[in-house]
Image 1 (spheres, one colour):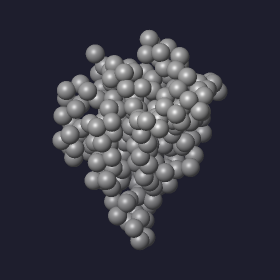
Image 2 (tube, rainbow, N blue to C red; image 1 turned 30 degrees about the vertical axis):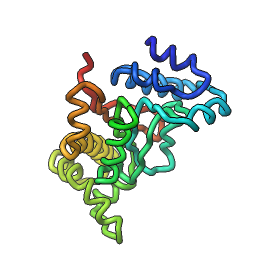
Image 3 (tube, rainbow, N blue to C red; image 1 turned 180 degrees about the vertical axis):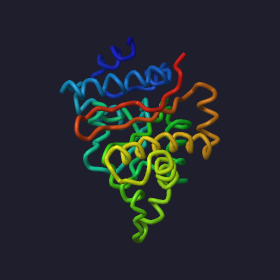
Amino acid sequence: MPKTEDYLALDGAIDQQFQANLTPYEAFCLLKSGHDRFLNHLTHRRSRGNLLADVSSGQYPYAAVLGCIDSRVPVEEVFDAAFGDMFVARVAGNTVSPEILGSLEYACKYAGAKLILVLGHTKCGAVQGAWAELEDGNITELLSHIKPAVDQVKAERGTEANEANINACVTANVELTVEQIRRKSETLKTLEEAGKIALVGGLYDISTGEVTFVSEPSWT
């Protein structure tokens, strides 16, 4: 993976040329190699002073991640990422809204990110709440975005709130969110169809620290 080797040779932040020459697949490889380092308790250390100096004049992230707010899923650490490597948007249940879509559109169209990862996780409290039809203040509206995944899994697997069903719902929610991004953002759909970005879904296991990619394109 030549781009991974180039990335590991950096002593500061990703620059514009590095980002511009990156394909969506190479961005995905960077994400996976960072996660491999995390799983193997390795860290790509770069000078914090150099990182701060570089990002003070601009940012050229290779990816944007939509994750859950859960404190057990520190996104940058999970992918061994440093200052300037990735945009991270976090909301309970990793769901989309106009604000999230606008953020992802900015990340890709104007700031050059080549990959969007929707990252769910096992034992997700938001998914559990949606499964139980929790209603409480603003949480009610938030959980309504997860209801299509809940309805799908209950129809397929039954209504018992066991761990397997909840995690199946987490996966379904990730996959449906990826599809919602395509459906609700013409900007991102157009970029994807032009091969300028890729959309990927992943599931983080909070017990093992491992990410399984549950939705990704057929790389060519």
